Length: 128
Image 1 (cartoon, rainbow, N blue to C red):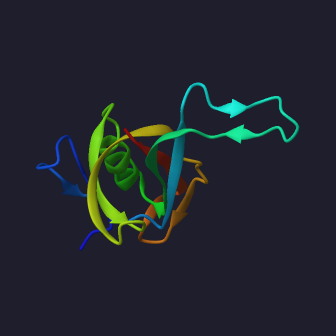
Image 2: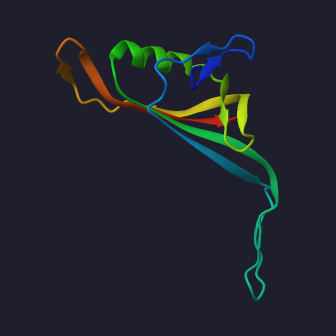
């Protein structure tokens, strides 16, 4: 079973290949616009969480240019659906995400019989 599946809708998901070399699961709290500190004796902080959103940091290591293009194209739409293992729920989920800035640091080198490889391709996807 692939680690990630992505698509334009929840019913059109396709496997992302190869699987990421690293995936970091995260949970972000979204606070109310009027959250913050008050000027009292303890500088009390009011978080006022309104929701929580998943954030996945994805990284692929030593992939070829064709694989990098395929991965970057799969996550290029403004919004997309992703099937992934959610560590808070303990099972696979499908949620809508958008991508943060993408980068592909290149160390251009040739591997015998394997061709040119990119050092890494990495980016965050954030739940909509």
